[in-house]
Image (cartoon, rainbow, N blue to C red; front, side):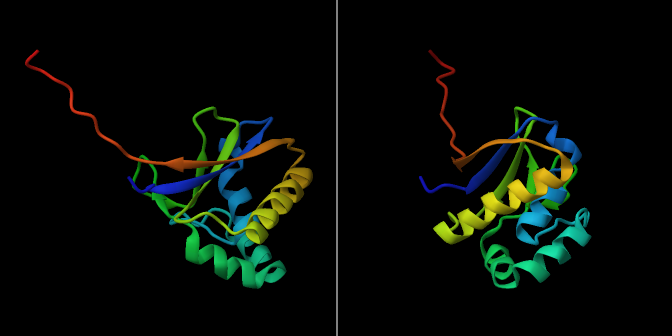
Length: 131
């Protein structure tokens, strides 16, 4: 089964719900329907213009519980930022993601504890209801 999408996860020491969309915008230049992080996305577009175009091609917009499409969310552990991708970023883009995450974290006094790349698959398993 083909992955539905890939998740680039930034583990931090703080509640990610306070900054996940802004961090994604600064790292990639991508924002969601709600346009949170618009100013930081423009910073990314100025600082890494070619890469923001590449990110636009591979970042997945995923609906939240209210139907608002966005490229990032908090992870189930709450202190991690998840950015959604249609395909795995190449090594150069991975390097940029890590560098910009660290730079954003330093400005916001957040500690980055690590990075992970996950593959998300949606599967169904039939349960025998007659036995």
